[in-house]
Structures are given as structure tokens and as C-alpha cells.
Image (cartoon, rainbow, N blue to C red):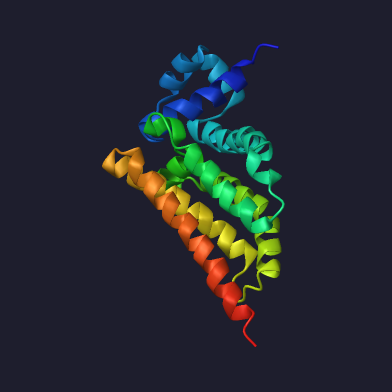
Length: 203
């Protein structure tokens, strides 16, 4: 089934906003990229902000299937699943910066104060993805006897690090710095569980 105008506009937002930023993306550009008329745009969305909020939710739905089928779920040990998840995120850092950076992370940096609907949609996307990691993190906390850490906070920390890595890649115009930061994240998680685990097993 061919995508309708609404779906085309949402898909166009993924590429255009990551390439140009939210403020620099115009309705005309979105329509041109999607191959639809301006009338079709306003038939489906009352404003650019409305499209952006919908694009954030669409981004969550689109990326959810990618992560749900990713190979990191195949590991028996919960810590191995977390570390493999981080490796998977590192493997996704390839191609042009606009191709691997996050739509919602890009939008919220610009719109967090002026567009609460966009901010809310971006938070739902980022925190919702973090929540998919919580079960494995909680299982690892229990297995390795780690104290002073919650699954929710560590799951959000992984996203803070990855989003920060994307910002540095943009600032330096170099994907390598993002890869380095994700490597540091992996080392942190490894140390957190090995060091805290040893502390927890002390008599």
C-alpha cells in the first residue's frame, strides 16, 4: 500500500529536521521532500509544531521495531544484554551525521521552551525508549548485587550519554567523537556492575 500524504510528511520530517534543524525547516521544504501540496499539509496538520509532535511519536513507533528485533536481546545474561545494547547503538553510528542522530534529540534542543507539545512528545520518545531497558537493568542489578542504582536512572543515563554523544558529533562534525563517548558509556556500565557487585558480595 502506498503511503498517504500524512505518512510522507512524517517521513520527510525525519530527514529534513535532522539535516537542517527544526527552526530552519520550513513547511515548503517538508512538502517538497514529501512530494505533496501545501494544502495536503494543512489538511493533516494545523501547524509545523503539530507535525513535529506527531513526527516524534512516529519516530518512536518506527525505531521501536528496530530495537525490538535487535540481536542484543538474544543474550542469556542481563548484563550481557545491556552491554550488547550499547554495542548496537555504537554500530548505528555510521554514515552522515544526520543519518544516525536522533530526531527527537534534535528537536527538543530547539523547541523545549517555546513548544511544550513538541517537548512532551520528545520526552515520551526518549523516556519510553529508556523504559525498554529497565527490565534488563533491574535483572542485572539483582544478579550482580548492585546497590545505590535504580534501573530507571541508569536507563535514562544511557540515553543522556548517547544524546550527548550526538551533540558532540555535530559540534565537531565528526562521528568518531560519538563512538568514543559510547565506548566510555560501555566501560562505565562494566565498571559499575563489577565494582558494585564486588562491594555487594563483601562479608
